[in-house]
Length: 390
Image (cartoon, rainbow, N blue to C red; front, side, top):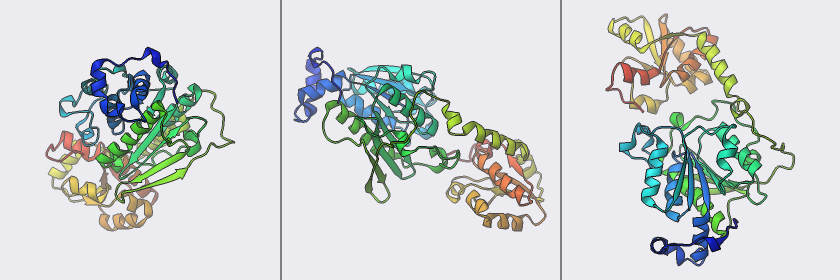
């Protein structure tokens, strides 16, 4: 529980009316609303989780809100990132978020950090705030935020989402566990697909983000039982909540300083290995593929290694679907051999990464092939705009 000097905090007449539904709650009341006004919360990310977080923290009357983001609004964000609107596409997310926050509550102080949070700036950014809410979507940043909160003794309200499932908890609060107690080591790069690859139900973000906002408010007003020591798991398809106990690991390494989190998560090594693999695989541009298709040549097979539901969304004419998971399992390798029947192989996916991986597996099986740079995304952008982008 935070302990501000409430004698210095006053609500103006308009705020009494604005927060009236809080003020009549015995668990909040005037003291609780003053605590909210005195509090400062840093929200890292204005994406799927950051959007509902910021909306509800602003509406609740948090006095000072910090926002960290460096991205711009893309039309594909609007399915779940409800703080942004169509008019903001192509513009900085952080400015879009500030505009919306101040529309909801002009009595909030909004601090902007239009930068990528890193080991060099994390401590300086986080230090002035009472609570940190993690709305990020990648492992290096999650470990960075966790370690910075541990070093500065700040509560870290955590959430994550993927497809139809989400989880939430509170780390580093009143002696409770931190992120490294849940995940001592990061997963191998590429093992957990991003939302861009795996997808996410838009409303799931609102549910998990709202839980994070609820936990933040409870910490500030000092009411209820927080999720510290408990990991809340939610499955939207089954409409079920589960809970796992979390405890501090007595033998976990002591966090003494911030490190290189990209290195810790193995990303440079994975990128180097991927680049090495791609260097050994021939490539062609979408323009070259277009010329080949227009020529009427029939001595090749155009292989699409995306998932079946992606193939339904958009496809390059003449392509044949053999999903990457089938190739990884081996049955797809046999199918590719049958399809080729002496023809040469050209492969593509959404952006070129999965097809390069597929060609690497096929190469080990004795099948050489050419990768289409940029995949079907480049085809849509540079060759045929009628092909949907997703």
